[in-house]
Amino acid sequence: MKLAVILVNYNGKKYNTACIESILASGGVEEIKIIVVDNASQDDSMRLLEERYAGDERLSFIRLDDNYGFSYANNVGIRSAVEWEADAVLLLNNDTEIASDMLLRLWECAKRHSGSMVVPKIYYSDDRKRLWSAGGSVSRVIRKVRHIGLDETDVGQYDQEREIAFATGCCLWIPMEVIRRAGTLDERFFLYYEDTEYSFRLQKLGIPIWYCPKAVMYHKVGASTKGADSPLCAYYIARNWLLCSRLHLGRRYPLFLAYYALNRTVCCALWLVRGKKELARETLRGIGDYRKGRFGRAAYDR
Image (cartoon, rainbow, N blue to C red; front, side, top):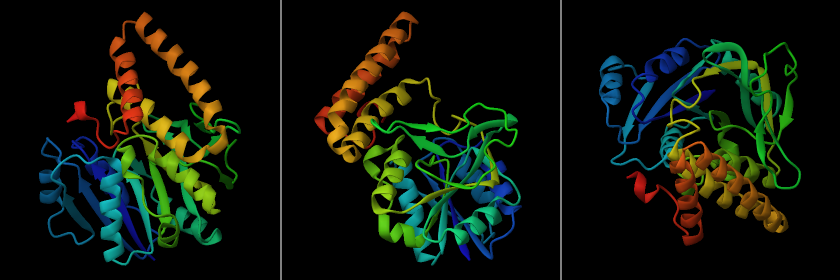
């Protein structure tokens, strides 16, 4: 088994080393390559990594000349993994740490469910009994996704291995045979909803997604972006939710639009009442850019 772990870095100096050290301390796979793809960071995170791991053949570094987004950078890493002849890739956020046996557990699960994407149980990093994700579910009509177990204390209620409908992009074990069938991440999304779109794409192709509770990791939620309550987040969610739904909802898309309009109207009203007008402004900007067909990185975010 040759596993390529792909980390996308953007100003991740605070998090990279802990993540990489947890990967290097893990066991269970025969060969591992950590591919760090840098989205033109403005801090010295890449210099520090290149100095710390100089001569370590288990790591390789790719510097991009601009911030092209999460999907694009992961796809660059996947192409590098293909050149290395990896059997599988692990897309992993750099603001995470993995348990010492997580890779082994994911590999065992992947072998039990050949041709599937596999995901672990994810806890909050600062509260290692509080769940962030025990897999994901999708609502029946408008196909809204949610993390199973979010904010619950883990008392074993999600310890059964099972097939799920949605997987968070925080950690995805993807065999190369799945990538050959389904392709790579959609680069139009730049940030947010690329994992939802990929999950829906796999479902259309009949490719299962399995949740493996014995595989465990810890996530510093929001650290790799600017947080869930930021103008950046409001913009990309408003735009990309529309794009993902248009691609995959089919006849249900008009019904989704009615729900979306109500949902975003309520959110914007609450933000205005709470003095967060910038969130309402960027939501409207995201909707406008969707209607104009402007995808990838937002013009104002350059």
